[in-house]
Image (cartoon, rainbow, N blue to C red):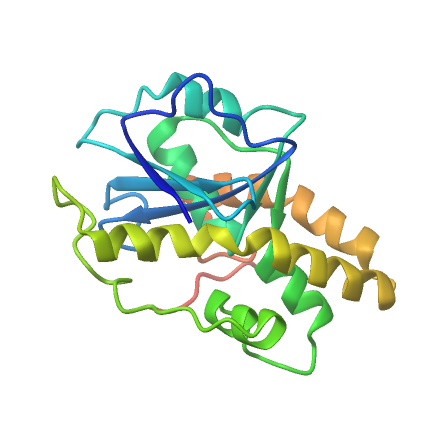
Length: 210
């Protein structure tokens, strides 16, 4: 595995083919409050590119160009959160998108365990460490352990997609999954706009209690 760390943007000559796995690390889980610190990307080849941001510096033209490229599928786990974070801080909405968590929920209805760690273990027999998940991603210099952890969140998404696609096809839910994933950018925009806790499709949309 090769981990390439870049400051502020991707190099112009980096290519991820027609499908790129993406994840983000922030100071916290509130995209309106907590700044984006790191974006991880992989072509599914066992290597990862990590873009490390300084506070408030999100120009990143090469990364933004990739995120909105209609010919490149953006592959996430729990895309809703990453899309909201990228939209809030970079000002662009990635598309088209695929979410391994959505695929898992649609096809693994026998389980309520759909985290990336669960999927990697159950579908690929890979045990992902989450030890660095709550570390300080805003540090000016990231540790080797942080970089390894961050890379691991994108290295296996292509393999997970392949397994989940087979099961979606087996259960005749491929087209349903595509339709749901096509809605994810709009769902993320609603989250950023203030409707994160509101079910707008309900007869009487009610904000969930805090």
